[in-house]
Length: 158
Image (tube, rainbow, N blue to C red):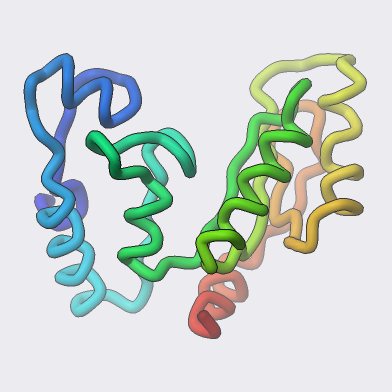
């Protein structure tokens, strides 16, 4: 299990917050070593971004830096609500600025709403971003079939 989750923090917050609150430094080298071990054992490794693209893992080191070190393609997940267009566009552009490939976008909606932003985000994002909308999850979004094998296979091009 240490290779799957090499750093355990109890605080349900960004890694930097948990690290500071628990007085436990985050060992990025340990994370990278565990990732390399997993890559040797399995065909695909999916790495969860622990709070978002520009969330600090430790002082001066962000999730984006970890993705670069791991040379990972990126799947962006955004909450479909007011502000989603900005959040998703900024994140996708930032991924490109780090010279990594964004393989797609997933929109989450956790509540029933008639909010016009939540109802239109998927359509607008399909128009403005050059990444596939892989799935819309939740009450107000159209469920899109996700071909995970196709997505995972497409990461090999990176």
